[in-house]
Amino acid sequence: MEIIHISAECYPMAKAGGLGDVVGALPKYQNQAGHFAKVVMPMYRTKFLYDNQFEVDFKGAAYLGDVYFEFTIIKQVTNKLGFDLYLVDINGLLDRENVYGYDDDTERFTAFQIAVITWLNSWEHEPDIVHCHDHHTALIPFMMKHCYAFKTKLANITSIVTIHNAQYQGWMSWDKSYYIPHWDTWKYGMLDWKNMINPLASGIKNAWRVTTVSNSYLEELTKNSNGLEKLFEYERGKCFGILNGIDHDVWNPSTDTYINHHFNVKTVDKGKAENKKIICENFKINPDLPLIVFIGRLVGEKAADILPESIQQIFTHLKNQCCIVILGSGDPVIEAQLKALQNSYKGLYNAYIGYNESLSHVLYAGADFLLMPSRVEPCGLNQMYAMRYGTVPMVRSTGGLKDTVIDIGDEAGYGIRYNNASVADILYSTQRAIDVYNDKDLLQTIRKRMMQIDNSWEKTVANYDAIYSF
Ligand code: ADP
Image 1 (tube, rainbow, N blue to C red):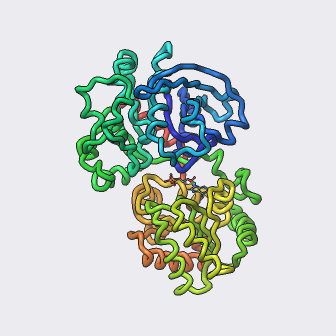
Image 2: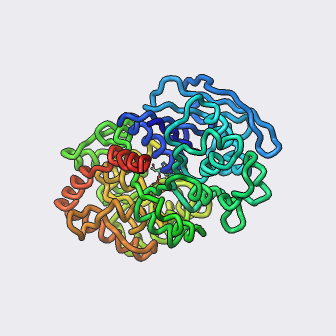
Image 3: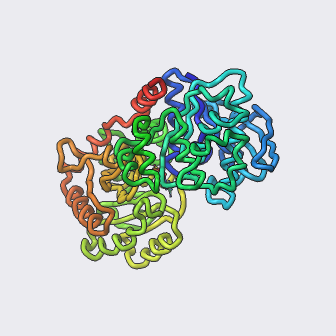
């Protein structure tokens, strides 16, 4: 099948979170399974853009409302990612350093979608699957069906919307409806949700099938999805949960190019100890204590707001029994609080505020535990990476965390689970982590058990195949 993935992120071209990892891996594994999968995304000004060669594939022009814009689609020349990567260049709109966070994100991503669909419409053949990821690309199924310029050619192509995060929906006021290329106004209900144009809701209504990145997350969305609960209830029949995989070419402790000491399931204890030593030297913390790390966006969804208080409680109640390192960026208030704590707990605690891909690999490899108290976690990749590197996940029972981590108290368990994103639950789980660390036989058993779990993309690709041809 020819599958075109449309996304705002794709690793290594641009990644802000798990979406980038997923779109950077899924097409590669689909191609290995015999498909012809490719990715189209915006051309941001990232390092990957400057380090790689591209050729022009298509030049076109379109309107965003009454603004005429020209765009160029370039293709990475070598196919080194395992799939064809196409970048959409729209001068002044997409060619920025960051993926998101600009005041004109609505215009940027709407123009991006218009450029992509104009390009698809120019193909001499039709792809088998148009696979859209998150709200930034979720207007495409509507445009395929209800925009006069595209529907003749594209209306009958199978469209899929995968929801990696339903918190963000791309809301636009109705006065921006003229951005969408001349469309059948009888179909306004297919764009609308609660008197706004809601791109994610539109994607759910118009796509052939909708997937979310875990089963538990799908169930949770019918109860809590930032206003879309009823829609998920109505459309439940065409929604499916498919757990993400992890890319073993990138996330493999025996080959990872970011870490100094490689290891496998047989050498895990030694390998982790060596990597931990490096972390402890760099962060000036005690290497003899269990090391708990947090890696992620410092936002409410990840419960990062309760980290500062949790850290203080941990060091008050469990004095000198563990070390903590934080890697993250996000809310400036949380960033400042986490930084300030460095002075209070020297030798036990440190934080790196910022985004650092290589440090994340080093931490997964060298840490003993990974803390994820997330309030919302659609799938969660961190816990799967951690497990692959023999790092015990301490996770709140929600979404994909619930679907991928079994508590050590249960049969064949390997992780620590708790129910609430609260300081008390984090404190209690830290005590459990310290107990696990002090029982070396148990620690070794669960490290080996986790490392052998199959979270490969091959399984996930087969699940997507079933949806594509359902
Ligand atoms: P989300 O997409 O909600 O942020 P996921 O668990 O799906 O969460 O994916 C997060 C990805 O981003 C992982 O690959 C994680 O290692 C990475 N990541 C998050 N924050 C940072 C950071 N500050 N530095 C490096 N990597 C990070």
